[in-house]
Image (cartoon, rainbow, N blue to C red; front, side):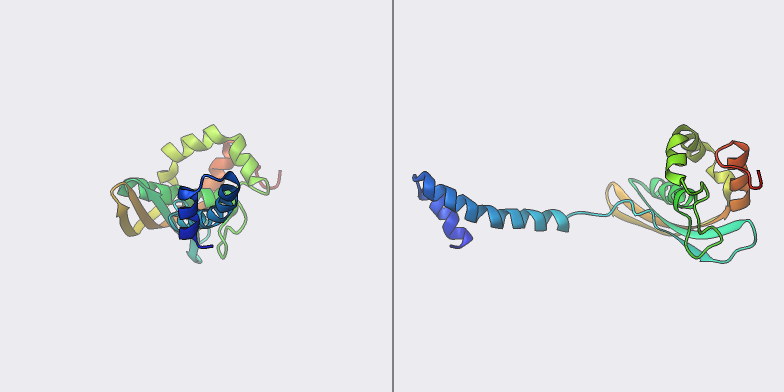
Length: 173
């Protein structure tokens, strides 16, 4: 029985047994349409993709990072924050910081020091950015934008700051 026939039967029938059978037939196409529609409309908003550009001098790391936001400045800010979060929590493959800067338990260290990192992201990020370049900015709609930035980050200075603030252990102790 086709979807249209099932729908017609539901509208015409007064017999509940036929209605139950018809509802089973109707449910499958509606459910399938719902799944297809909901997956096709989803948009990935926060990938946080960060990639190493190549080798840099000792103590520095150069990365590209993607960000999203409601405005150009918000999407650029998100890209910068994503780069730092990836360095801290995941590490950057094919770079001089492959492992998370926060160590093996990076996620728990980050969560444990949530207030510290909130202040850090709001006030101190520019101190650790040596160079910044906007690769692209793309307005996706009225309140959505994406950006990609290239950042040269002072990795050694960042590590020293985290050590002096007792967020990570000093090596050799």
